[in-house]
Image (cartoon, rainbow, N blue to C red; front, top):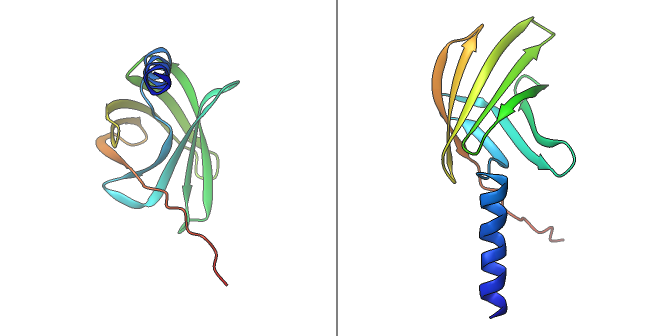
Length: 121
């Protein structure tokens, strides 16, 4: 019974909050950049783009959101680059992203798995 109640509560949480955009995502066409999406209880969705190669971090501003779509704008002050992004939830491991502005293209983001590596001495 407890498991049934817990399962219903989790399902209700997903329905109320929309799709689970949270995670680390990588564009299938560009392996050097990652997008981290956090779902903060107070601030809502937070989008951060980073690259280990470029050693850079750029924040996106959420413009609006519904159950399956989030629209953002990203501006890189280092090079003046600005683009609008439309994220469409496909499934738990795939998001379609449409870029317009300084870049125009459609691509797919794939969820990266985070593994728990325990330190051993």
